[in-house]
Length: 525
Image (tube, rainbow, N blue to C red):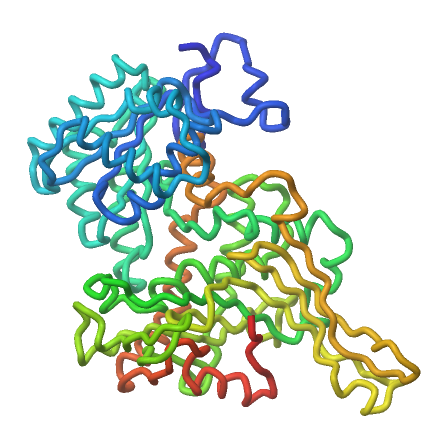
């Protein structure tokens, strides 16, 4: 293959230097053509799971359909099932037809399916990993994948050590001659600080840090990345993005579904470990960070690390945290059962499905501004948003009757499902009296742009294949997030059961009381 197909150099990973020739289509500054991955293969461990079926396989097809994967691409599934390559292809086909974002095109599928292979085996089977190594070697020759392989661990975290050890023993983790080997790890990364540190040590003993990509799919969402554009590409917002003007910040991720048969996995994990530790604290870091020198991965990571280093839980924990379990109630016009009645879930479990915490960011920009983070299942509606609530204006020329319907100004970044930005401010009500009340100015991605946002996994998988680590948390970010959250988890573990809240509502009373003590209230998304 030509130098056109070689990936961009990655810090810490050697790459061959083409003899004085540079492909202009791989220049990041050139917007005429998209950046296309070089020759490579993806191996999915846990290929029979929901994540692989609903997200990973459709995302790979969508990338191929958009012309972002090379002709020399392969997809290898690894699982216990007794499947032939054709059976695996049928599974991928069904997943694509059901969940792909782009229309199905037979010619794209035919080209992609030529690179499908399946390897049967278990994680403790040395021979299976030997077969995997042989399969990848054959694909390097048959498909021209060039020895470049990404290993996607779509498996329970407890299986990580075993798979990593096998990748090391079989020689798949080590590459020479300019080829690369990368590992993609799904959250949650560990279950507390100690386990995360141990896991980081283990991963880095097999793969160098530059080859480790810890997936946080929220960071792949266009709206999240737009936080950086909103703040740093505009002069309008940055001057007021600080404690002088902002009263508090609310970051919410709400789901309207229950466990849906995932009780066995979820019990012992809970909402805080599942969502706050990675997703919400990453959103906090992007919201609170200082302007980076450039968008180079190391600069972005440095600024996020500074924020997380300065972040800690607000004390006392009994007044500034809340947790709950959903009880029976009405959701979407249907009567739904409570958590403890879900199949496969322990009746005595203290695992929370709702968690809310208050954190302080001790920097000059944010001193005195509380950040409220909440997440939960079976809440009023599915929504993720970041809301900056501004301080109240003094209203000096207005008497109380003129502004009694006026709340606080707010800037709301809607991450999903209705991607956009809302600005809430006061406006005079038409008429012969001076009365002011809240109105909203709304920007929607769907109506402002002619093209659809790519699915988060599309962006992230492509970034892995390009060796672009900007949207992936590094060791320090993962460990700092656990350091922030661990005191709350330890406190909850020793203080009884979570509060019950009715399905279809917005969480337990303790969450509302947490804000009411300071004269604040949760936004109704």
